[in-house]
Image (cartoon, rainbow, N blue to C red; front, top):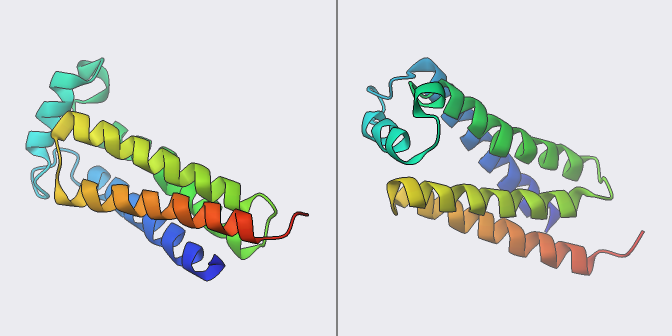
Length: 136
């Protein structure tokens, strides 16, 4: 289970870091099809003139909320940290909440649906791992 979680958390972290970099490289979203999403963010989220002029703040949010925590969880798994599984569990819950926010803003779409399932799998796997590992 630990190997599976290492791969999963690293995959999610890389996806979040890649998404953040994509937003920073093309903050308008024109080259990756994000321009209509920016309009929806402006319409539904608070302070559109502050946070949603472009995707740069969204990239930082994605990195801070999903990229770095998933990377920390991966490192904790590799170091056999006693809190690794609870951190992985938290990361899965956070990812699912992030996707629920995406659904609210943009509606259902394939990529968000896939990441929601990955978050759910992460939560289930972390719970199974916590139940099967001996108490320290």
